[in-house]
Image (cartoon, rainbow, N blue to C red):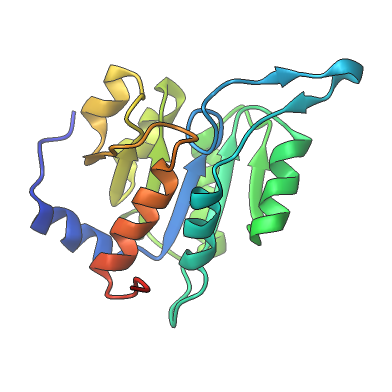
Length: 175
C-alpha cells in the first residue's frame, strides 16, 4: 500500500520519468469489449488520451510509451500505430516479464517509469515503478497501491491526465 503523497513529492517523482507504460483495458478503454460478428472485438478510445500520448513523444526529450495487456486485440494494435506507440505487448500472460523487457528496451530503471493501471494484474508493476497512477474507477486494491489516483476513469481521459501531470512537472507541457 502506498502512503499518501503531496503534490511536491509526486512532482519530484514525475521529473525522473523517462518512459510511460499503460495497461489497456480499463485504462485506455472503459474496460468494455464489444464482440462483433465474425469474431472481431471493438473498443472505444478517448481522443484526449491519444493527444496526451502523442505529446509525450513530442518534446525536446521524448518519453516513449508502451502498451501492456493480457488480451490481444487488433483494435489496440491499430490505435497504437495511429499514435506512434512502437512497444505494444498484447496477449501476454506475465506483465512483469514484459515490463522487465521494456526496462532494457528503453534503457531505464524502475524509478524512471510511470505506470497506469486499473486492476489486480497491474499491482506488481504499480509497486515497482517510480510513479504509479490508478484510474478513478480502478479496483480498491489498485487505488490503494498507486501514488496518484486520477480524477478520470478508464477511457475517459485518465491517460491524458497522467501525461499532463508528468509533462507539467518536467516543464514540458504545451500551454
